[in-house]
Image 1 (cartoon, rainbow over the protein chains, first blue to last red):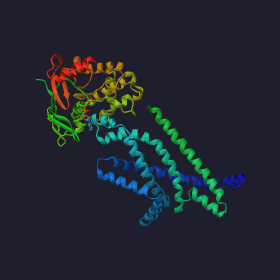
Image 2: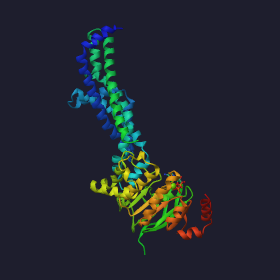
Image 3: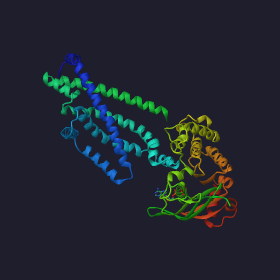
Image 4: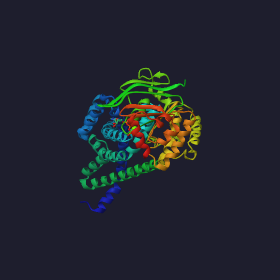
Length: 221
Length: 246
Ligand SMILES: Nc1ncnc2c1ncn2[C@@H]1O[C@H](COP(=O)(O)OP(=O)(O)OP(=O)(O)O)[C@@H](O)[C@H]1O
Ligand SMILES: [Mg+2]
């Protein structure tokens, strides 16, 4: 194990490059989770639609994502997409992660939508609102609130999963750490350093999610 | 001849193997206050929900204001605007304030300007005696207040008919009176109402027609006076003596 003072001095010396990498990790995470939310909402709505085939499509997507390792998905999408059209590495990584996050977020939304009392839909319909209008105005706003804690959790999982983008040469946190570690023959120090940066990011995300939850909780209940 | 608002002919409805409504016939005239009574599981809620198309009938006719309503010829969303519904468990929208609950459908469905909708909502809140609660979220209201908001919300669509499914059954006893008073006021104003209820006193006082259901059929339908003073069917008599003792 490296000495504590060695750890601290290395941490200070590499601050610049790690902060850049941290920003890239954050960008990758935020983009992939936000796109994942859109994908997830789309597949959640397919799943609860009354058209059976749409439900099956949603099931198939979730099964594909949950049934294969993320690193396999990243490689397939990265090499698959770059073979078909020119796409910046960042977007290849972000979309691969979004595709992955989307499946878990779809399950989060499906659960939260189905947890809303049937009576809410009936009340909306009895007022002459259409099914889709009631979904949009009545059900989804409530479902989003309920989805927030698991979404926050998914954000943290997505943050850590983004380390796999190192394998398609994104200079995010994990890649920088392993590269510097092997260049300096000092892997352990850099692994400990990168752990600190992940912990900082998770702490920030946790605080932000808690703030949003508190803000929403104030308006009702 | 009063205008016929609802007419139901040979209505049948099953849930799987369970035949819940059996050849039900019913007629409701303008300004009628009809109380639907009967034991638990007799099909009262199902019948009421069929009138609002929340349940899909198997066969039979549902005629609203002279027009037989069919999926092919009618937009159910438009028909529902004429038929308001109040539920046992209120189903207020918890993420919206009292005022927002009331203006939601008028603004989103009828496209009434928001200003006007708010004005009308305030008038309705005054009517149900909740003017001071317009900016409150439903979770802060008592059961009786929630149900009065739900009534105001339904009235905001200016329906011709109001359906109530046990509107006071989920309330603490001391809160039942305020909701019944609101409903009575509506009845006096001439609203056409169909009410599923166990409140025999209210039925006796406010309804002009009583319909007694038993195992999916209407056993007896009569003017209130006649129904309570000289019930014809033995089962009606048994039901009445059981409920009035309580
Ligand atoms: N969605 C449903 N699926 C299956 N069975 C149902 C459904 N809704 C109602 N039923 C059944 O239909 C029968 C009639 O139900 P309904 O709710 O109309 O009775 P009710 O007269 O309103 O009774 P209560 O006084 O308890 O409210 C009952 O046996 C009930 O279990
Ligand atoms: Mg019922």
